[in-house]
Amino acid sequence: MRVILAEDSVLLREGLIKLVHAGGMEVAAAVSDASELLRAVAADRPDLVLTDVRMPPSHSDEGLRAALVLRKEHVGLPVLVLSQYVEERYAAQLLSSASGGVGYLLKDRVADVSDFLDALRRVAAGGTVLDPEVVAQLLLRGDRDPLEKLTRREREVLALMAEGRSNSGIGEALVLSEGAVGKHVGNIFTKLDLPPAEGDHRRVLAVLRFLKGAP
Image 1 (cartoon, one colour):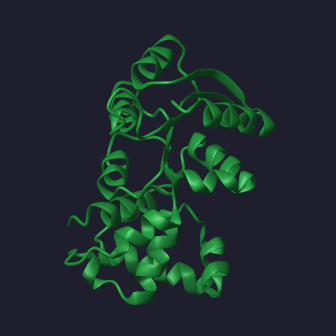
Image 2: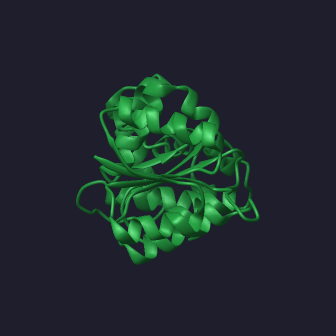
């Protein structure tokens, strides 16, 4: 798996390179700003883009905006964004853009090497990975119709779905049988008016509804 990463901090960039290599992946390019990131992907499309949200020159949202451009210009390109803080609208924008694997993690999550490498692989394979703290912040939003139709347990299940967990993983986290989780997931699909579809497409749509709070 080939990764292009963008991080302006030299120390963190070098650390990420070592982590990617330790996971048996190749670093196709390591750049320090959003413009370099766009050029690197245009020259040599990778299997995954890993980028910080805040980069030069303004250190605001250059990395996020570059990620959105990349997902628009390279449909299906997996992108995992790292951020120092929880920024709800960034997560919602990113997950609402195009298709393909996508993730949003806080930089503190990189400290858990195993989870971080697993997140890289899941996003590269087309999955969705959200930091639990991002999910927690999104759950604080109010007046979200039709999400307000969900029970407390269903919202807990949906929050774990948003983290990219399987039914068995959700069952372990909530101490529920896989069958019980399946029933909750089915109720979520029904209440969010998501008809049957192949694969995990409905799970992704449910997560998008969760993030956007839109009917």
